[in-house]
Image (cartoon, rainbow, N blue to C red):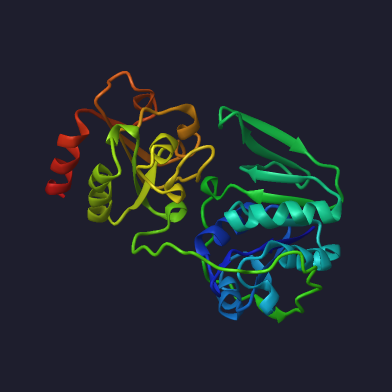
Length: 308
């Protein structure tokens, strides 16, 4: 079996953590060829070639592949698909945009958020907010899969894969780039951070979310939020952790003023160590927490920040 893995490339640079975890996930499926596509992708290709377990790297550079447009990237993958039994990617925002289009063009199913590989035809994925694991067996000739990277360790380095340049394929011209609006931040990216500090509705206001940010900055952590906090306007949408937000699995997850609704737990329960701070001792978050502090967050968080 042969695997084509769509690497996560942002502004010409490889998102190493997500790509390396997808390499681990795909390792049991066969020889892995990594595809780096973008307006600029040669640097990403060089980085991908160093990941252990990668047999070959394909680099496709063209203006049509820039600005994260899904349709030209999907067309490129379909043009290469005949040589591969599996087409996979990390379950990032970009891949969730591209891979369903690839599956539709190939007239096959897409297996999204796979968390385990049983064999070349059979995969596991979480359902019901992570409370059950669904086992899927596909009879499609080509398997199209996105892997939930939070459940896999990143592949190491030390690889020396050959790098080959390929054409961009036919641009279907279904979309065009108009404008990017990017929020700049010195903090780590939420889905790959080693430490995440999240705030919930209990924080009370957008101004009081500064307490969460101050603690995160002390720890060099990313900032997250529950859906309730986002819906209340306390935090931006891209901070949301949960079933309808981002899935994280850091070494340390600190939940402040978060009750622990099942939808939130689905996005962070794989964290290595979970710390909860909440004044309600009956809050469900304490059922999954390794360490719990029943306290007023407006007293506990500033004290913790000062101590750090």
